[in-house]
Length: 345
Image (cartoon, rainbow, N blue to C red; front, side, top):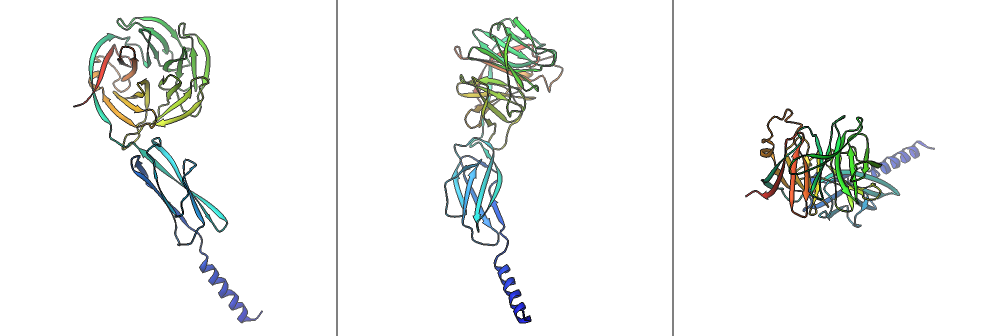
């Protein structure tokens, strides 16, 4: 081959290379967004080269096809919390997937609630309360701490413990609830829950947790168990086989709220304590939006003689649906309160 031919081939190769730059893609999305806003996702090829098509998705679920390299979608019905948004790009018989994380926030600020004390009753000051339930005129209580954990039947007016079952020392007891005429009880770090006879408290069988990290609070909606694990997540478990079927995440319009603890299901809402805080959250069961917060600090201030102000906080919510009575107490509190929540004026 002549020198002229070599030069021609080299120049042609250089020209071809200059016309086929490496494809560089960027997926643009907000880091967080309230769910009453429209979510816009945009895919750009940095060198302005053409692509065949783009498929956008949220959590692996494909969004409607679009001709352009961007899409705007309504996210009003999505649960709150962490979501994976992605764009799969098709070009030159190739594909490339880009993924971003977006946090969906509540639409509205939460309502601030106050409380009114209706009645005050005695409560065992040695009880490290982890779960509280009302059933047939009595309170049932699950307590924690290694070597101190128990399930109890308690007379409301006197605080007298009528029945008690002590857990083996290797278990740290957590939340309790009644469903399908069984008593369910969580343990903290063992990854198992107990299903008990509701009258004798004797163990009938156990169930294992799934992806949820630990056992904290427990309630039910009449069909499903509802479980917290110490994070912002609240899990829904099949009432028959206890398998995890999904979760919500507790968010305000600005941030997530972690350490969700004791739970109670009241008229379609999830009421929750937060560990190390004297508060009650009211959470939408479908989205995870925190709709209201009741500051219970003034109630906690009535607890004189509490040694550990950080740990021995409000923890225990029980609801008497028939008589519309709400009961609350705390870890090692010597009082149980019947209260009413009301919107702050």
